[in-house]
Image 1 (tube, one colour):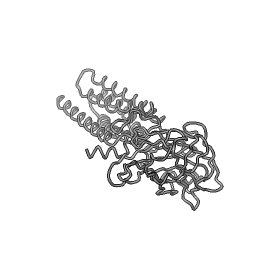
Image 2 (cartoon, one colour):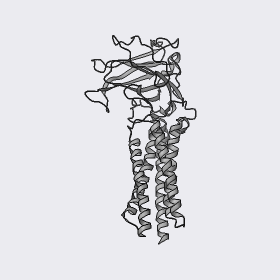
Image 3 (tube, helix red, strand yellow):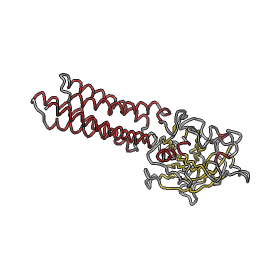
Image 4 (cartoon, rainbow, N blue to C red):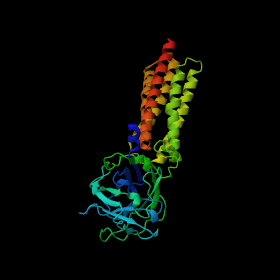
Length: 403
């Protein structure tokens, strides 16, 4: 029971990264908490947005809701090289697509309240140089009884809570004030100027008596309990795959079948002792290699920027597989010519023994990058361990049988 509670209280996160220098770039991490005193749900939010070349122009906004009319908008702007912290302007737009207004204080009897805990400009951990400075606006806030704000569409127990985001990268501010007039975002959906994403608020819900910590944005992770499509099948006990993109599905399917089925099958076939063992072996390996190539293409289309451990390991594995194919061919040619194994044979075997476990471990890293729940990641790791152990035992048994 304790494990289930811990899994359900995991912070959720969504990051939007496009072209690093010219497009929207932000992350949101969220935890919700059942307040025993007010019997309402409090929202703990960490919001970061990146400014390249230390730009003082523009603004970035996120907020729970499906449209401007029912959203509570957290809008960040300011000058990274100035003396002041980033402005965190909390606004609503009751009339919809109009100039957002500063949020009005709730009635004295309402438990609803807002507190900005932190607002800082920080040098980016990656990409910062004196000639091309990059800064992150790091904001943390608490929205008490957040669902009690009038007109705000927020359900802290929803498995698919809609959020909106918007940005304007070019607006010049004569003065940075909380009620500064905001120029409109671009009308294009996506990287153009606005968009939607969905958070599994139920997954982040903590009912512990103590106050939760502010969530930390996890570097290199785009989604944890989040997606750009409605999470209609997502709950605290379900997988994210139902809500992710076709490219992500294809990438995971191709790589999973290759490394968890075809390559292990090829290893078993070459040890089977059958007359057609070699032919079946190279056919299985060739099919696996084709799937890996397709999976690599799908992965690069999904995330062209290589900036995560999963991507770096995956590209290295693909490179090693190309060398492994060459080693396999040389082994066959020399074995046919000499009638015995050579160092190329041993190299082919040991490279294969090394690359498959590394690739399987990278599959687990991919699940973490895709935002799978911790419990499912652990279960996948256990299954991968059992697969590798079973494969090793089977190969050992086949080798002994041939003696």
